[in-house]
View 1 (spheres, rainbow, N blue to C red):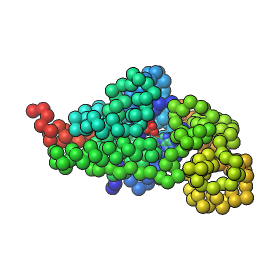
View 2 (view 1 turned 90 degrees about the vertical axis):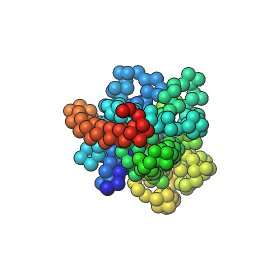
View 3 (view 1 turned 30 degrees about the vertical axis):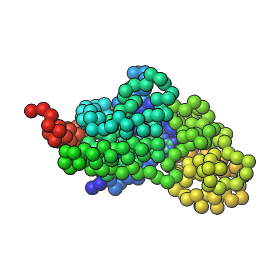
View 4 (view 1 turned 180 degrees about the horizontal axis):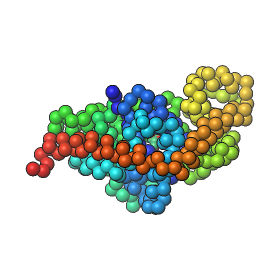
Amino acid sequence: MKKVLTGLQPTGEITLGNYIGAIKPMTKLQDEYDSYLFVADMHSITVAQNPKELRNNIKKLLALYLACGIDPNKNTIYIQSENEYHTNISWLLECTTYFGELSRMTQFKDKSKKNANFSCGLFTYPVLMAADILAYDIDYVPVGIDQKQHVELTRDIADRFNKKYGDTFKLPEPLISESGTKIMDLTDPIHKMSKSGDNEKGIIRMLDEPEVIRKKIMGAVTDSEATVKFDMENKSGVSNLMNIYSAITGKTNEEIEKEFENCNYGEFKRSVADVVVAEISAIQEKYYKIINGNELDEILDKGINITRKIAKEKYEDMKNKMGLGR
Ligand code: TYM
């Protein structure tokens, strides 16, 4: 059975972009693949975190996974920091990764510009991501387009290691859905909707009150044309709303253009808000039951037992091939 894996950082409350780009695809893939889904808490400390908030966000993210339809019987669910082999493998991979390669990562270039005192972890972050993936011989990695470059780097690192030390890793492929490629900020649709964005009005969070979500969608930036047509370059606001509508309803852009042929933007936005609110409200209802229940521990214990065994084996294999230890 082929394997899929993805992870999200528990930094702040996750957004509709995270849901559409990574979690929703996993709810489909889990029926066909051996699926791994984790909380990337080690990645989150590459920038400063408040420890109390971080611990709280980890639990919230796990509860959201389940509430979004991630089935614990079909997925191995775990917390990255509970499996020390990820960082062990990451070190071995760092020593076969070039400084130049990491310097070219666009996410690093963007994030390091924001804070002159960025951590070394921010720089080596993509190698830890490679370790997360390569430890399990993963075939496909469902991500938003912002993470594509990191999955491609993972392939390069794996290929180099295989050539140098013998066949060790499977080369993974990024899996990017058409409409969920990149959900944009509602008020600034040339930039992605980000957990850490500056303007709350542009970000739909999975735990926003339904009425707040509706208001944000009704206030989304559009254009002066009043035609619902997909054109990301010239009509980024409307196209972004179409992407959201498409990701939730499964309709194509042509179908959406036809559906709203004779409608103004107000009517279109109302329909987008209706489907988003319906989807998120159902998720929230489940979320509050899970966060107040006690099913998470058992799921996580099971997940960590499975993943530690697999990752340890990969680590030992790498160490042996590299001539480390006795
Ligand atoms: P993170 O936490 O930044 O984002 C989690 C996932 O959500 C996707 N995403 C989006 N998709 C569509 N539109 C958006 N506006 C949007 N914003 C975010 C991201 O592409 C991602 O898929 N490094 C990763 C976490 C990670 C990981 C891994 C992922 C660590 N190890 C191994 C896959 C495999 C990250 O920071 O994602």
